[in-house]
Image (cartoon, rainbow, N blue to C red; front, side):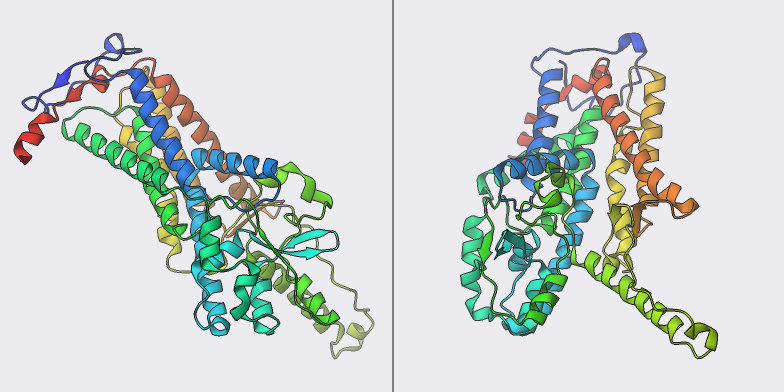
Length: 436
């Protein structure tokens, strides 16, 4: 391919006619289609593999499938993983503050992340169950456990870091690859050389990967086996209270119900606020029923107080952390969540094989931005009819996923006919002369 010198690098090339577009470009002194594809896919795959931090599963098959699913989720919707990282970070900080009074401030984020990723379990006659963050906090509050003995529970910081399989060399390789890729893209833009749609898509991942890795910086990675401990002696009433604090039984290892299903690899890790919200809703319903039965009028006394039952609410599509959702940080979070599709608009003027494909790319990029912003306005999205807004809450993520599939397809299809300057390169040696 041609090499652009500094004398003409500031002149933008006019848009070529469809006949002037080039298809598969062989490797030469510049770059070809194969190297362009390999560079982009390697950058995306390497960064995705580094950034994902899966929860702990005892069964190797489930563990591998969960990591693969998390990898695919990050490829198709990296903003969801970034927001999930923010919510886990928020929960970990909340737990760290709560436990500070009973641990002398020695309970750190790494401990909160370790418990939050289902790495701490307790033995039962049938197997083992997950110890959720609110259960561990309750044990501390009731003084049933002493932080001085946390090492016996596998919570020693050095032991957690030893179990973590984070590879510093892979992290360094990802940092170097991303830095080089971003620098190359900036230099091409400075030389008025177009970026391919695939390159713009790869660039869109970078900010979200950086944010996600910031939130999960202290989270252990790829822990193979959980810490399984024996619970302290408790009175029957205490044991009942402790068990009632469990957020979910799906991830227990007792061979019951959905615990054996491989579908669990698709589920997000439940968070403590979900259990707290369910308990609050039940208490409010019981109080309402009690007030209605204890009214002063004779008519109300004729009614019998019936036990309040929790109704199945349907499949939960998304549920944002209430503290985060109602904070001043949420509008910024929404804009950041929409940044990934918005960065695709870098290719607004990119030449596509046909005018239809060009406008389809623009339309899907705009639809993905708008649908993501609408979707994040709903604190909780449940797949169950609850009025006209249910259509909007369900349709917005569906439109987003459809637009993402269309955009990925457009990226692949655009490689069959690209702007000739896409494969032109610039002279790097000129800059080394100025530096020296």
